[in-house]
Image 1 (cartoon, rainbow, N blue to C red):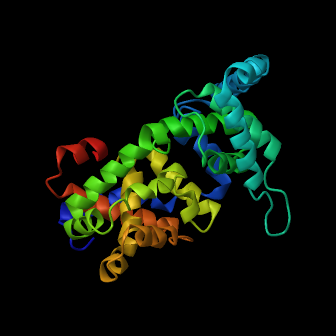
Image 2 (cartoon, one colour; image 1 turned 90 degrees about the vertical axis):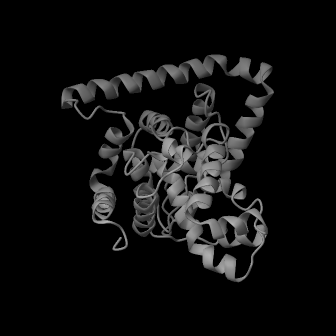
Length: 300
């Protein structure tokens, strides 16, 4: 940050001030405020009322699903296909910790995913949701909390991890950002690395879950995305920062698309704080430039 102007350096530090994150003991309750499950201005009594309402609404949705399930099975081939996909994805999940203790209830998780698919006509179901929903189930105690937190998370992050809504936009804006901030790298990616950026869609579909060394790191990044700080669509700055980690190797070895993708897939066991800090510095660099309108509308 020492290369930035004093004003932008201060802005970058302020933008990064939330990096310290949430203590694990308060994470469950804090997420209910971050996602909009509870209002920041609500009283304890109001929160009890809201939680009771969300529990009842979830129960009503479950009852509705049970009634219409036979109809869905008979009239909608996509339903049966999706149900089978969810079942397969759930079975692949490793549900025990290193000591052999069961971490998640796969049956409950499958039920919540099916209900989410039926009720959320925008997001539907895609591979990756099962891993994301697992982290919500690990965080909270009750099924209605898991269900609603996931729905609110999707809304709060502008469905950025949903293929038919946000993922393609993220990839396009990532390409635009690289062209603006790093023309040399952009030129290589357009030539020998053609298609490499578009192949990075799993980063967004899984909301970077597979890039980190622990669940705590995943929650850390997701918490930043929920704050909307330091800007909207922070996930694209995160992806840009990850690409910068392989930039020198790509250019030195003149890598093609498949090799670039392999190098990116090898970005695992990352530290969330370091990655968030790097993305904040990219943001600080961005805001001191004459940003094209497309990037300005997307981030600022």
